[in-house]
Length: 145
Image (cartoon, rainbow, N blue to C red; front, side):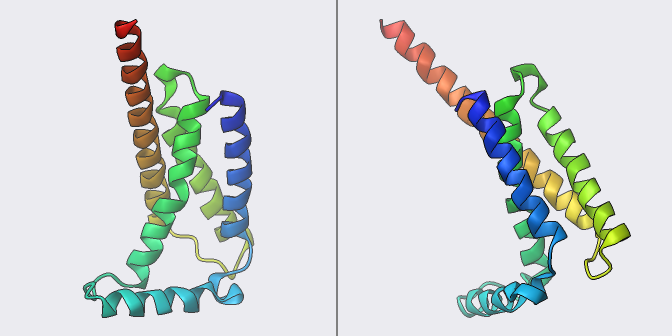
């Protein structure tokens, strides 16, 4: 992926994340009832009861920031990949502070910052792994030429 494409993708995805985190609460758009239905289904499949709404929300926050870590690594120089995680951490802090200060219907929570940062770290790790595989593949092809 070119850095230009990654920049556009990151910008677009960041706007999406801001919309999800700063717009109407889940209850207002019907997503909370969907989450409860999903939990009922997975519990019916035998998923333990400890996998509750809070755990589902935590995992959703992790998943939401995986692309940010991936795109961040794609736009940064190789030796500065870690800035993708640091930037995602501060982006998440800004979101939580905006919820705390200006959105009384939203709940600011430090666990969201943890989950978002974990997601960005997972995304960065995935991008680094894919980059290493690509590098290994390119070098293997060069060795056969």
